[in-house]
Length: 398
Image (cartoon, rainbow, N blue to C red):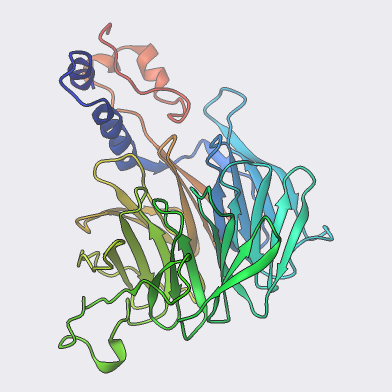
């Protein structure tokens, strides 16, 4: 660390290199934190979680019981041991609660005063965080598997919605109406994701084994359909032409820069695609267990070098290197299947939720103490401090 600081001070290093190196070290040292608990509120499995990007302080969760919970991740007591408290809940006693399983929750990207939820009760609700009442309710003909708000959009306020109907619905927050339909899939749409690079680019994944990329400004069909064989028809059977997976495609995730798109399918494969050309990069992640019939929420690190992918795999979370496919580690701690995970880029932490009704916090551990520091009781005492709220810099005064 001192080497990085010296090189930065003398101008030999790029300003981001130190930050990337420390972020990468923290991700590689992720462990289940025994000192941090998350209030157990859900009475059934947790399908989806989301951390707001404005303050990085509040987390949403949605469960199979239809309940929505807002947690405060801040540590107020200054001690290593603390619990992330549920500050408010849309519980079963609320008249506005979803009747069936909540499949997706998402904060409004620019303000914590609003969030959106969608459910198997065929509705999507836009909530006022202060009153915990829906300001707008969109109703659909079938179960809602997924929705997504663009994290960067300035020229539109569209929510993309994937339902049991093969048509993708585009709902406008400003007018409160469904304004457009994207047609092309032949089965239910399990996941939708806006590009974090271009606000009009949308990716959709379906049970028809296909992933399509759309420019919503165009009146015609999709820009392109991802092909796992990159157009080589000699390798594809007649049924596998223009398919991204050999099964249901239930997971989508763009990298932080929007240059690549990751997909997961029930063929136990995860694939990395060039989001501009639709080319399969052919990175081999090996077998990625995926038995989910619904949307699978996985995530990618941000600010690391290299970047990492966190994907639910049975009762564990598998961590892969993005561009090489190397399995770095398996994060084990859940007692049942993991359905969702979310990366916190401010602290390089990971939160995961599963069918065991638990949300677990995976937190970086501090540097291993040097031999000289072991004799220093003060330094040894600091090792128990929560690394998310205490810095891990070494000191040249020791």
